[in-house]
Length: 213
Image (spheres, rainbow, N blue to C red):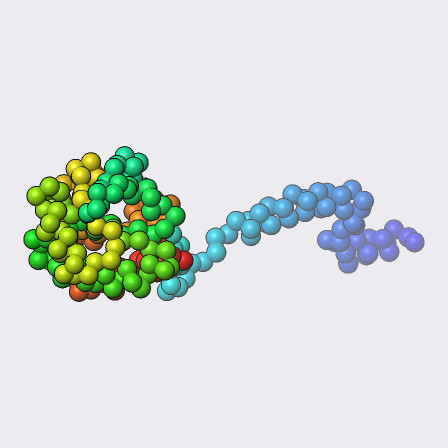
């Protein structure tokens, strides 16, 4: 090929570049740097937030019920006496569900409450419930009145007197009567009722049912 033909070829392809091995390696190196940066840029782009989307519901908070307080040991073993002079103590009722009732012969609400306790005793005694009534009166001065009261109201559960070492820790300064304490089989105070209301009977029955389960 003569020199005139070569000159014409250069005029026709003035900008043509040859892809040499060196140029290919150079481009590959640049791509190796650019591509990871592009990937990182896409990965770190924040996801758009929909302002109208509802907020997620808060996680429910579960709280455990507080444990029932134990019957104080000094109270459970304190000596008691019933109307016949026989000794006993509240610990004698452990293994059963016990209903301890503080009352007095002169107490009007007690007179309305005790017939309900007599009914409950008949209903629940065979299932392992014991009721004991502790009069807050003076044992020496009220013995005859208490015996007559038992006959008049046909009380068939144990009746005795409440010494200070039993009444004070349970009542905790709240001396109003009647008061009822429901004690579990293992000596825990499950429920306390102060005063008397017609609704107490159904509430007390429910507490006894739950305690017997």
